[in-house]
Length: 214
Length: 276
Image 1: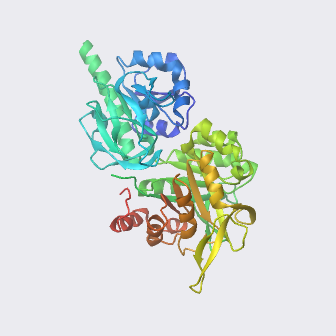
Image 2: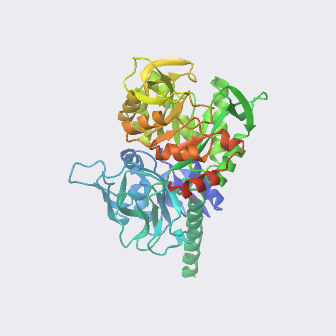
Image 3: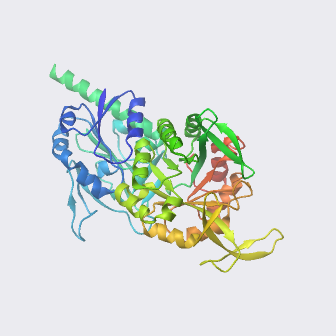
């Protein structure tokens, strides 16, 4: 299974690559929209400042919307936040910045009642079944670093609680556009399991496609 | 559900006589003892359930730095937990190359004291979450500080002291109060504060609780307590009494006096939230 990690100049992609490799994937790290158009599975990372992530990932927005039709995509952290419809981050009070709209929902700042950013290990609560969380149980820990989050909705696969309940793992209705608010590449065994689930899911997704064509 | 307290093993990495990166651990302050291969240790702690891993480059030479970046990458390849790298970071370019080598966060000490603007620049470019400001605090018993705390003396009486930021492993003072500096670092965008104590370092008598508490009370940024850990009771004390978010230790783990799991089970039994 070949997985393409979109390199748009943010943070450390090394662990993400290594985690996917451990899961048996061949990994291409690329910033070329043509590579992304051809990819069998995509990972949209997101480390650091949201505004920079939005601005730097801009050249890939159209191709991502196109790929969402027929390709497994995994967004990580800000990569997930970009997939929602809108975010209040970086917008004037009362307004929002438009996201890719691949997953319904809105991204908002964590409440002031807790230390922000939410940084550290926190527990996951499964909300509904999806292959991405196979083998993940209530109380498994994941590593979070974020200041914004989205509500728990019907599209939420697992939730977490920090000052409020929020979506820790979410997916679109078709199930192929998935995101994690935490960093699976930094979440020890739990995170490696999720990366491995993504690679397995992408493999099965294409196998089904071939079967359907035949 | 709540955030767990983080248990963080730390390695000091220098070049051995053959020019290879190796972990050295201070025993009784200054005697550095060879204690292993950085990559093997990263693997070991990753598997043992460490919550993060800290890699400090103590070479301080140009050739050393190149080797160290390669070693950071090799460590990052085995580290599926957050990796913080420190030592000799002075410029935005240093931050960038360290992150690109595979670090998730950089720890900056004297580079930030010499040029506080580096904190702001680093936080703006790479996000506050990856800028860790490290301070080497030393107790001073004179009237030049900004904020005083009571500390116990050996004979059981108490005395007031303030904490000075030092550089060069405590050999040089800066005259700056640690609490004042912590607030400034936070204002400039530091994502975490890494608080070392020159007085407690290597003693295994416990963390410097008044120091850690003074910093925790002054900022809302997460605080990593360091220096002096002799066992799980010391970790419990620094979390419960001082309010630290993470506890760092080196020799108790390197010399297998305690395992990470053992420390975590102790903390769990004593009501401290940890990731088991």
